[in-house]
Length: 293
Image 1 (cartoon, rainbow, N blue to C red):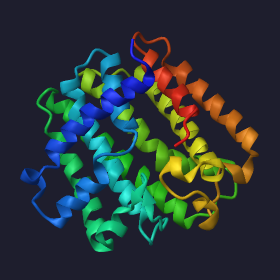
Image 2: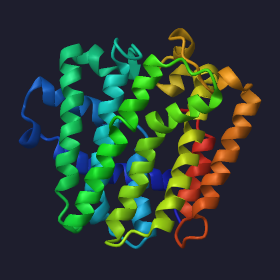
Image 3: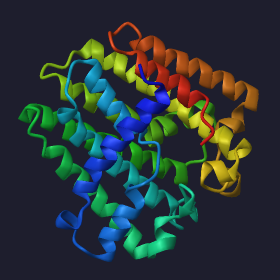
Image 4: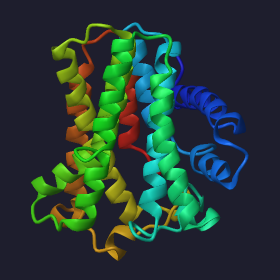
């Protein structure tokens, strides 16, 4: 059995190869817009969302051919969200994955269009999946729209900018939308790719796994923004404090925050550990708890 690092690399390479075909000039045109889309999407990142889609599909007996279009769609939506998140009107970050942010490399207008185009192309990719039923495509597209929209990532970004969270519960709600919604979506799309008859009990356990994983992921992000190494992270540290954002460390000490991340990670593992083939997804939760970037 390969290590979790090897499995992450293998899934990332498979997703990267498929993304390359979707982002080739044949589909996006030989333009600055196409360059900006590829710049923001290719050759970097952990591909966690793609990994989740691929391996949830495998866990429930599905094929990579069925999950890969959905994995690519997830990564395109994630790339779009990072482009917009880095822009001056949002978090105003100059670095992403160790290189200039898309708007620094291509200008704000081109970056905005690259993000918009990646979002719309994600739905094209998700809908072009001949390995699953039309009903599965419908479910996947609806879930993707929900995860990216006003009740998901975009809504969470709005609250992050507009709402000064006064309680920890408000902060958790924000993070469940901004970060957790797309993680939940990635897991569900993998499950949908493996079955034509989704089981509500399985969906509930997937929600529990994704919510635990997503909150732990965000807690570690908040800790790394204070304690991390900029060279390892590939982006500046201290951005949350600079932008006046409340994080987990507004309400808890670093030690308490790390303990909460451990609890969330264990909750995620407990949600799926009884399913055959869940070992890699459980290992992923533990791996993300220890990450340095």
